[in-house]
Image (cartoon, rainbow, N blue to C red; front, side, top):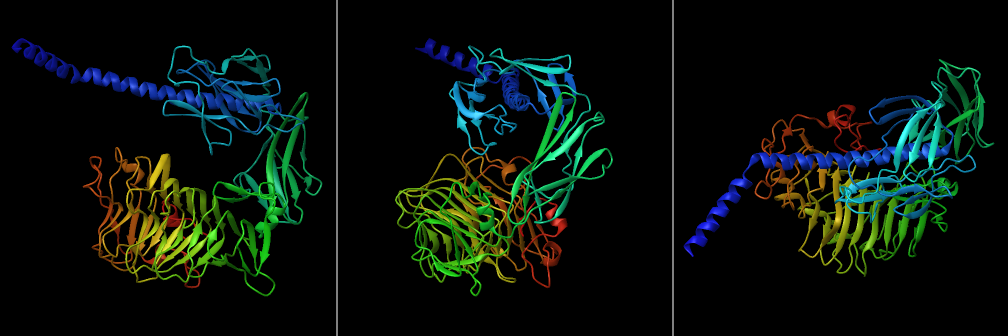
Length: 632
């Protein structure tokens, strides 16, 4: 027995000495770092390669310049875009990607039905985008908004791997040629210094769309490159958009674009031909209107978060005027009548698949449920440009009373709320919950005499994503309102795997603790964020305020909470502002858990005033810091 004990002790000591070998530890770290780098390179290479493949298939671009560094080519296209292409396998396993005989993308052996090849002169608009997450490949077909996992194995596998879809690349004569791993070849002409690139500097662009006034004249310039002698150039546009070429400037072709009346949108296609090569660039242009409903009738998207409201997906939308009551599901555009300002009664407050949109883009419409709760009982409740009021004096304002299953989306964008001394929301109906909550670009007036909750969870409910961003929360000058942004009652409310909470770029004016207050009092996930928020107050906050008042599952990531700033007009403030409770989380060495308060910052220094009134838009000096809300 003694001998066995000695043997076990010797073995344990040997294991300990081996485990403490720093050389082995460093090797393990180096191996892990190399593996992560390989995966990042593998992912970037795949996305870069597929971008250039799709452009080759469009057949309306040339390469104006290129360079080579090892196996990697840097290609500058005729429209000014630059791409990198690296053939061959880097890292381990790739998704299987090819192009069908019908010109559609085939991913993971499945024909997606999404065009890879241009047809009838129209470019294909979808390039699969890939990412690696949790040792698996994911694909997106909408620019990264939605992802689906591919069943093709671990990206780091090296046995029986699927190779990079692009196996070879070369310059041959006047062509750049790539070979796919299915044996198919694609080529694109190389024509030095021949360009067809719309000059976008100085254009009024929004999400890549050129916005112009109705019935106006605007100038469009196109870079042709130094090799454009004897080339012809024209702009192709619908008949209602008149485009006339004028005098060239600085080697650029110059056009005057005459826009039509009303809501209208089109793609301007610039086409340059030299010899056998015809190259194009294009730009979507849209007339500016003040009416969301006019945009809807014209087929435009009205965005509420990630939801596009248009006449194709919501063909039964209604325009309602004046004072109305909404009691049925539907999409409603609301406008003033000729004699009465628009106001909406939400009937009994039961919102079952209701969308509310102000017709006038510059003015909010009023909506109220009186003394009733506003209860989200359907799959969605979406609002844009609505000013909400209530006569309630206790309890909460928004909830899910009557819901039997989780809602998909509850979105408020460009809205405003006069919140009395009550909780803004309490989502605690058992069996319900909301997959996605969005509060964006809103104004929230808060009048809390005690600490209240903005988003409050409870009951046996399930949530996935909560985003509170680019909002202004404010209390009147000289008065602190106690407001917790995100809290939970009990332990029944849960978050789905992969869920995300983001509380970012908000401005909080005179929002603080009436008693000890936590802005977040829900057990945090490691990747949740509360960042770039600006806090300002003009009267002393006498109680401690903490951003994250509870623990974090896993390692606390300081960078997810570190860039929040506190300012006051007071010359001295004894208020305590903390990033997190040091008793709940471990702070990185050298990082302070307290937030410094910058004194003597007058309201006029930090906020823009017009005629003595402010909507809490930041002055250029503070807006440049990248914190706080950017508001109209």
